[in-house]
Length: 389
Image (tube, rainbow, N blue to C red; front, side, top):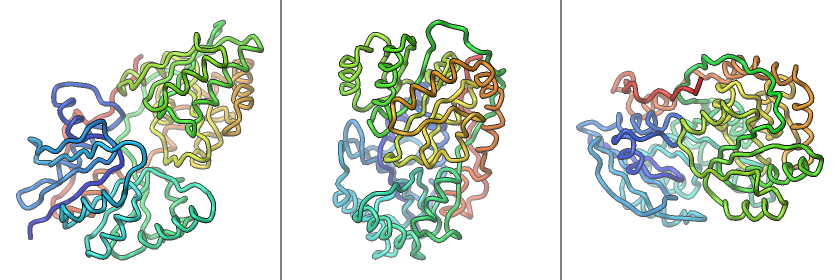
């Protein structure tokens, strides 16, 4: 029987990433090449593979040299799940690899008897009655026998799936390939102006506005810091907020840096900021891995998905999410305590080690979608990049 595997993800452009990496370009995020190669490895003489990305800069449809058909829908803002579900129906897949929790697509797949492998990097945050009803409906669909396995990125994200009602025996934590850091711990930076780095979506729910307000509070107290922000999104909104707070001169909005550029910036920085609010559905952000590998201390929020990972005084300085004053206090406390700073840097390698999970994303996908293909073998270029020494 000929198979047609449809890979559905929320954002990106498979073809753009393929051609960029094919030409020797850099990864936009860790394990991007690994992700692409893992999907391409599913192609064989009896198996077609189509990648569909919902949010993308432009619409595109092309068959790539690796055999994957790449469709970018060119959507922006809120994704119309009816449109996506109709497209999935039109493509007539025999198997669905679902990388985003799209309820309408799950319902359609169940009704048509299309087997689903779900691999998320999400959590399902609290909300009102409508949010609870949606979570209940999502859990019901994920528990259906039509869904073969439900993966999520990291142990906390998997516990979150179980908390909304997904059966534990279906839930599998997965990870990307990781490379241990060979960098030495850092010494306390005895500098008049500390360098801060943020990398991620430029979104209020990610705590970007809280950083800017915290910097304004620090400036009023005579504490000098400089922030470098990497990421795309509501950059204009945050430029205006920085100007209103009188701190635009000490914030560099650096745009969407490549993974290697961001990692190097983390190593050069004095602090990495991970300030996500509880309202943002984090899974396990790769910035935590990269910050640990850089040996640069983290000041991070108490987001539920960071519980047991960012431990106050052990692996990070932790502050109450959504509270700029608490963020400013955490930064001041770290500046005032050289011993704590150096301890966080020393502990970073053990903190990174504690995140490791044996199951890799590509192996999980292959196990459930292509068990007869044998072990996954990918090219050396899929290894994550090193950090600046």
